[in-house]
Image (cartoon, rainbow, N blue to C red; front, side, top):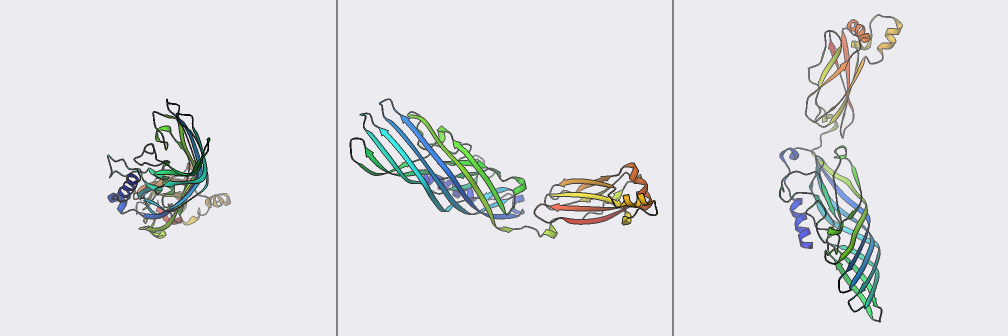
Length: 349
């Protein structure tokens, strides 16, 4: 089982990126996980043999240099550093002759590395996926001291292997979960995923369908990705493209518009003022009103898609626009991952 796990991780870590992803910014992360895990197994056979086992432990580990593009994990990894603490083991076994053996201890650890990798469908290995699968390890090792009711006993080492795959994945592990990086978090300096789930019977470590009465492997904790480097990320000043020249105001002064293009996803907020920022020679009330925007608009733009941003004006604002001979459009453009940039253009009547 351990060999199968390692082969799967090595294969998926080498998946080629799509042509679009090759041009996208690349982010490198170290993934630190920590969690509390509990396992319990109750088995009984027709011959009267029973076995009750339970274990609890805390696990931490570091998976270095996983790679993310466009919110997708394109290169996974395995743990180089792990630690287990707070182990608690309890076992009680009765054989078909009624002989009982009780075991206890604190030495619990997961065999094999923890894995973070794209949740690739083996039938479509080159298809890009957003889901990420985390697996704790390929088995559980329990170091216990045992004692027979009639006397005797000593230290023993028990190994429990997973019964099957992590549900919804092609990964064999004693415990696992599937998650994805939210679009708004892609490229963030730190990404945190909180997990809390139980592995069902059929995938629970030690599960055997003919003798298992109940089995559960539960885990809760966090996976924290900390950015260690980035490639192909445009400078802040390059995150938006210049406004194109398609800036105009309608002849009836009912609206003005401009075309905006961002190289990454961005939010555009537009405000319109009379051209020159003044309402001309008017009454004090009209001059006071002129410092306020005549109209506003807000749009969210997709990367590299020219989008028309339209600011509409109420009838009461149109006389001031005609007197000023047009409007001054102020675009505040907030690209994802960069600072807000302001662009000002004039649309003349």
